Length: 232
Image (cartoon, rainbow, N blue to C red; front, top):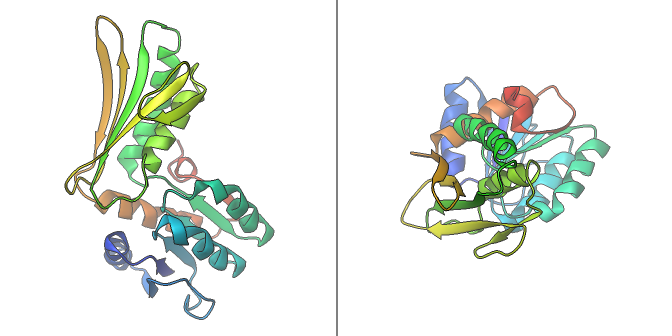
């Protein structure tokens, strides 16, 4: 495939290497807002930029009928508009708060555990995420996805950063050193604690998942997630 990378930072460079190792041609490496010309007739765009630029970047690509794989977090208030844009232009859009195979299995485990724990009022739930000090958004997109999975399968009604009350689910965001990403879900009672945890050792798993998603979406139209890609 011909792949355009929009947002050429640390992740973009890893995606570049993995794409070429898997036999694809990287036809654009863009740090700025794409244009029809700069996308160089790409078959698919992989977008890892920043929360301020993501919406405009994605919109340009979809308006030119190029499918987009997006891993940028922190802009999701505009996600419904992007999804409609993909449908209106007869192309495809896939957002992933985290493209790692392990994290997506962790999402499924999280939802199943939430269903089990919802029967036991003795336990309260809390989330913790740890990322590198350069990460701009808090909580992380992955933590929000975990929270949404719990809310959909329990009595919690909303998530909130830090301290909570009533039926709010607390997320604690820690920024430390160069940590790629650690996410923990705790269920605590007066007598014990249950914890599930995912620890990323580096960014390679995120990048590989994004390229696999790009390969999967190439001939499709509509709005998708990593659950579709992995058959979860």
